[in-house]
Image (cartoon, rainbow, N blue to C red; front, side):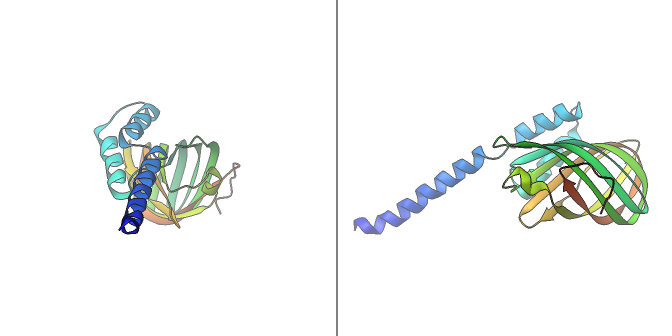
Length: 184
């Protein structure tokens, strides 16, 4: 009789422990909205809806990047950026990114970028190439989100920028420790 209850109790305790540890290692929605609003310097209804959408689709991120980038395209595009990766568990590092794209894309923009990062095991695992699809429309100003994924790691850049740009493209972002002008 006693043995019959050991396994279910052990599994229930393990499930409760892992759920609690997960919540401590990830950011809640209110914290991300506050940090993103502080970073962008203003609160917009659109920003809150974008973050809400990301939380609904992917849950709680365990890291984020605050940065800036510039990009341009005439069919073929280039994007360059830099920022600071901050993990909920306390790790932090400087990050640079660049990447090419190809598609029906025209124009240029400069953006502040707040990237939600999901399932990143350590700061060093950010330094890879992440494929993604991007669609954008900027006319003077705009906000948008897209997703990049490699294995289990998901990046969700939220861009708030200015410029004149429209289109859709496919490409990748290469995240590096050092600044480079080579997008490949």
